[in-house]
Amino acid sequence: MASLSSAPFESGMTSAAPHEFLTPSAKSRAGDDPIFALNAEASRRAKAGERILNATLGALTDDAGLLVTLPAVCEALRRVDERRAAAYAPIAGEASFLSGVIADVFSGTGAESKAIGVATPGGTGALNLAAVSFLDPGMSLLSSHFYWGPYETIAAHTGRKLATFPTFDERGRFHVQAFSEALQRVLARQGRALVFLNTPCHNPTGYSLDATELEQTAAVLREKSALGPIILLLDTAYASFGPKSGAAWNRTLVELSDSVQVLVAWSGSKAFAQYGARIGALVALAPQEQRRRELQGALSFACRGTWSNCNHAGMLAVAEILANPSLKARVDAERERAIRLLNERVQAFNEQAQAKGLKYPRYEGGFFVTVFTPDAERTSKSMQAEGVFVVPLKGAVRIALCSTPASEVPRLVAALESGVRLAELSAPQAS
Ligand SMILES: Cc1ncc(COP(=O)(O)O)c(C=O)c1O
Image 1 (cartoon, rainbow, N blue to C red):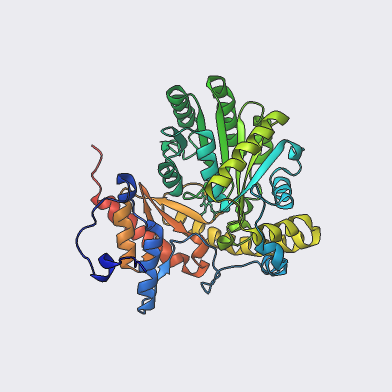
Image 2: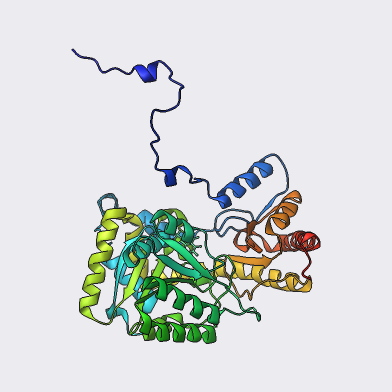
């Protein structure tokens, strides 16, 4: 019988591989997300016995550092029939899940019947589907210059690019004018535009557009839609943590949908405190039935070609919650407690950071806030020396209040104050 040779493996071959197997662009990619790397360093020092304040990771933890979960959601997951959970989900997602999500997004607007949706692995999957379905390779998606890092990863991985505009104007408000100019440039260059806007509770800045900013942004989108197709994706990952007086973004989206392709990236990660279950959806609004059919086809095709289908158990559990009013009320009440916990931290931060003169955007709720600094690396390194971990960005550091107990806010603010002062002292003075 012929035997297969395994000589190269048996001989412990150590010489260089005969070929370059990864493509040149894949070969140069760093696999470790910088935030996860910082978190690992913080955990290593904590394990070694240091008193570490780790404000890097975006998950809501209680004051003892344990992940906050919603018991009614965990029970719903455990109740899912095991054979249904084990079976493949439909490619576009469970119909009951999708209708629940659409109602969750557009309830009260009367637009539910004008929307279609497909299930995605978290909001991240929805962002990916939008990039591949609404931009050709080589084109740029547009977002503010403070953005969630994976926007760029998704763009690069799918052969697209990311263009940005300054996030804030000189008054510290959303820079509608810069957005308008950038949108015009993108449309002139590539004939279409896909815009990612993350509000309320923008990651990383914590900023929530108010009603005026939302209206002004919508007016820009409407005006520029005369120049070419515009697709607006609202990333609502943190929507349930937004200010109670927040802008009614879903009504604005419905009004916009006659001139712009409106998309919503919906995520169950934060809203249901199920980060690992990868529950999400991309919802698309289209007044015409023909367009809805085309969208359904294009997005389902992209699902099939990317992940095939999503976590069935997660979809079934969320579908049950969204369809059952008393269960939904229980989940809402549990979530409300989590929001209160976070809001205590937000309030403590606002009081103490303002007293120390730290510069940061309007912060009314949400997992993160950024504090401006002329040298984020220096600020974050100096904070690390004091055992406080935050994430350096360009021109700011990101702080995860979601994982910082209110009792630790004084320590956080003190470390920020000295870290920013150090950066200011060493920054080149403007002449
Ligand atoms: C701005 C933003 N968008 C989308 C997501 C998507 O999260 P997931 O894929 O877990 O739903 C996150 C998660 O951190 C986020 O911060």
